[in-house]
Image (cartoon, rainbow, N blue to C red; front, side):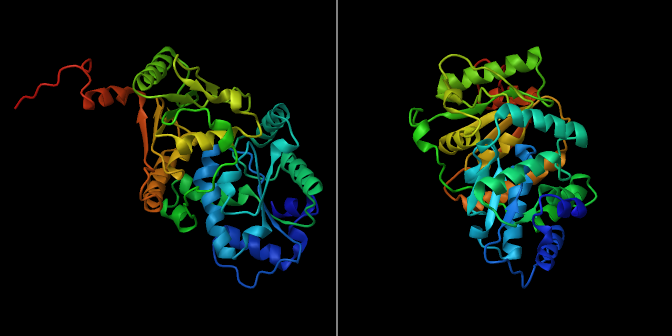
Length: 359
């Protein structure tokens, strides 16, 4: 991978010893001493092109730790992501570049599909032609001279043994800084029309919640029950960006799709969840976001066809987030859809069945 990085774009790894120290430190997690950047040189982190869950649970916490290890000032770091993820990188970088500033949603989706087909998977295991294009555009449009590149593939290489259970998940936490996302969102004005109190719901179909009659009924019933007790804001983007199929809402709920664009959709959803009483939805990367914002997250799946290591990491991360939100509720619960009747039973709903005691 290093050879390809050196060949591409004329960026970063020609900076000699400094670049090598950064590369070695990124992989090892050891402190890099006597690192010196040129006067106008910056470190580019990204571009991030993979799943939201890995971005929130691994990439950003790894960058938090790495920034401390490398003793890099924020004003020398440039982050590249998409969809208005500015607030997620607020404690890491001094400048954020959004891919949708120079690519349409349709073009990104098409080129993402080409990248995935060429690499054999969604995971960002190496520098692709799409990376090269994005990095060229970012350099030209933002006047970035000769940066050093810290690519997501370094993080994937670093944590892969833990995901494969060849290492304890403790290895993840030794090189990750799980920090609250406290930076205020740049889109607060756009959501002023929402209710004062509400539950944010992101219901969509995926591999772990496939679109079948049982799951459609379960999610619609869940939304209806929530709406009977509180206002509900649906985080439906109305955008064709990824491979998830969203579920439309019932009546008497607020649909936030009208205020979302490809460029701001993550910013809007982040702001909505930050103000919500809770997040409820499909288990997946987005269900991880609420605890980082100090809010509780309840998510559902019907097929346990995912790597349970990520659930373990998320639950441990929440323990660290609780200490940063003494007045908040950074909680995380992921449940099977078949467990939903247990909530009725515990709530002593009249239609939940017999509750008599044998004592």
